[in-house]
Amino acid sequence: SGLWEKLQVGGAGPVFVLPVYTHCTMSCPVLASKLARETARLAGRTAYRVLIFSFDPADDAATLREFRVKEKLPDNWMLVRASAGDIRKFCDFFHYSILTEGSVMIHTNQIFLLDHTLRWRATFVDESWSVTDLALWMKRVEHGGLLSWIAMNPEQLVFIALGGMLVSLLLILWVLVSRSRGMQHADALES
Image (cartoon, rainbow, N blue to C red; front, side, top):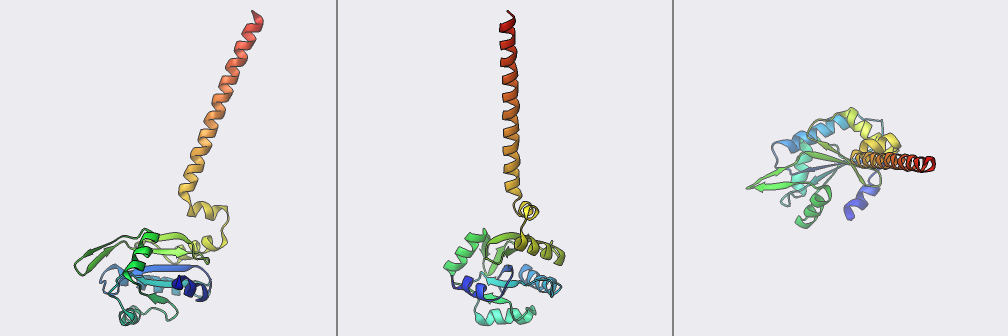
């Protein structure tokens, strides 16, 4: 809860959350550097915050400082570490998978986007995003509207479509049954 309080007072706008471990030699530094490059291109467009969350309980303040320097991360980005229990809560909340193989941590490559109220609204996978995607999704999470809701909730749209199809089928069935009864009633009157 202290982390969320720090984020609330740490600025305005949506929050990018990047899980890392500082000893990673593959995707963590790549994603951190890419996020730094792409958000730098947002300069002046809109307010945002960045949280780098270490999921390695062995990381400490010194390793986080070294990671910030090595990856040239902005000073206003929050780099945090947590206890094993809090890491588990973080991973459970974001459905974030980590496997440990010796000293190597195998993990998914994701960045999470929270709106200004700190609700999880979108996930960016691997490196298949750009500053254009970031700006679009930041706008969607902050300004809403029907089209933004649809883009952020495609699974809900599927349920709505299935519900609409079911209602349509029931309406068609009702019309067919009503016609059939009407025809039977007309035949009975003619006899």
